Image (cartoon, rainbow, N blue to C red; front, side, top):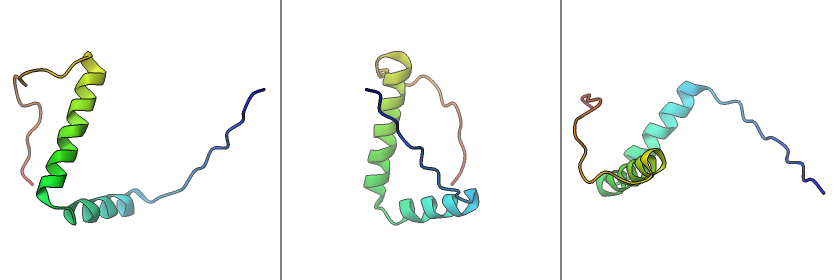
Amino acid sequence: MKRRMAMVVNHVNIEDEDKLDVLFWQSKPAKERIAEVTRLRVNYYTWLNGHYPEKIAEVVAKRSL
Protein backbone atom coordinates (compact mmCIF):
# COMPACT_ATOMS: atom_id res chain seq x y z
CA MET A 1 0.00 0.00 0.00
CA LYS A 2 1.45 3.35 -1.01
CA ARG A 3 0.81 6.39 1.06
CA ARG A 4 0.08 9.63 -0.66
CA MET A 5 1.18 12.79 0.98
CA ALA A 6 -0.45 16.06 0.13
CA MET A 7 1.88 18.96 -0.47
CA VAL A 8 1.15 21.97 1.63
CA VAL A 9 2.28 25.24 0.16
CA ASN A 10 2.04 28.60 1.80
CA HIS A 11 2.63 31.59 -0.41
CA VAL A 12 4.78 33.97 1.60
CA ASN A 13 6.17 37.31 0.57
CA ILE A 14 9.94 36.94 0.96
CA GLU A 15 10.34 40.46 2.35
CA ASP A 16 7.80 39.72 5.08
CA GLU A 17 9.48 36.42 5.88
CA ASP A 18 12.90 38.05 6.17
CA LYS A 19 11.53 40.71 8.54
CA LEU A 20 9.84 38.07 10.68
CA ASP A 21 13.05 36.02 10.84
CA VAL A 22 15.10 39.06 11.83
CA LEU A 23 12.61 40.06 14.52
CA PHE A 24 12.48 36.49 15.83
CA TRP A 25 16.26 36.17 16.14
CA GLN A 26 16.72 39.67 17.53
CA SER A 27 14.32 38.77 20.32
CA LYS A 28 16.58 35.87 21.38
CA PRO A 29 19.56 36.37 23.70
CA ALA A 30 23.01 36.42 22.05
CA LYS A 31 23.97 33.14 23.75
CA GLU A 32 21.02 31.35 22.14
CA ARG A 33 21.74 32.84 18.70
CA ILE A 34 25.39 31.76 18.86
CA ALA A 35 24.38 28.27 20.01
CA GLU A 36 22.03 27.93 17.02
CA VAL A 37 24.64 29.15 14.53
CA THR A 38 27.16 26.70 15.99
CA ARG A 39 24.66 23.84 15.81
CA LEU A 40 23.87 24.62 12.16
CA ARG A 41 27.56 24.93 11.28
CA VAL A 42 28.40 21.56 12.88
CA ASN A 43 25.46 19.89 11.11
CA TYR A 44 26.45 21.42 7.75
CA TYR A 45 30.11 20.38 7.89
CA THR A 46 29.22 16.93 9.19
CA TRP A 47 26.79 16.50 6.29
CA LEU A 48 29.28 17.90 3.76
CA ASN A 49 32.50 16.16 4.86
CA GLY A 50 31.32 13.40 7.16
CA HIS A 51 32.98 15.11 10.14
CA TYR A 52 33.44 18.54 11.66
CA PRO A 53 36.93 19.99 11.08
CA GLU A 54 39.11 20.57 14.13
CA LYS A 55 40.06 23.98 12.81
CA ILE A 56 38.47 26.23 10.20
CA ALA A 57 41.35 27.39 7.98
CA GLU A 58 40.04 30.67 6.60
CA VAL A 59 37.10 33.02 6.56
CA VAL A 60 34.92 32.40 3.51
CA ALA A 61 32.70 35.44 3.82
CA LYS A 62 32.79 38.35 6.22
CA ARG A 63 30.41 41.25 6.60
CA SER A 64 29.55 43.82 9.21
CA LEU A 65 26.21 43.57 10.95
